[in-house]
Image (cartoon, rainbow, N blue to C red; front, side):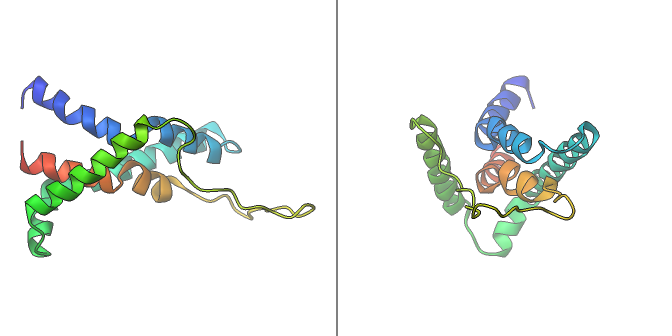
Length: 143
């Protein structure tokens, strides 16, 4: 694999994974944690997303064959998904997301133990989501 092919594979993957959105999510949920804990969470999320994406690079075509999904169907669905991601990036304003739950005044929401968000939702579906999975399957079958 030459450098040009590698760049042509990494650029769309970075666009689909959208690291700035993941960083904002990571910093929002990790604001109360120590630096060592944040490093561990970031490492686990990246390792998990890498394992998931590598699995689909090497086994994605066999998995699609097993469940009787043709490659052109995945190309059409993946292209549509990537197109929608591109259109949503062109829109101005706030990105669609979740709305925080409204807690009545006087009540506090406290976790007994901090929730580990490294695997779900940070590792998957934020880093290794449907768009990036379909992209790596397509890149793995069309080198």
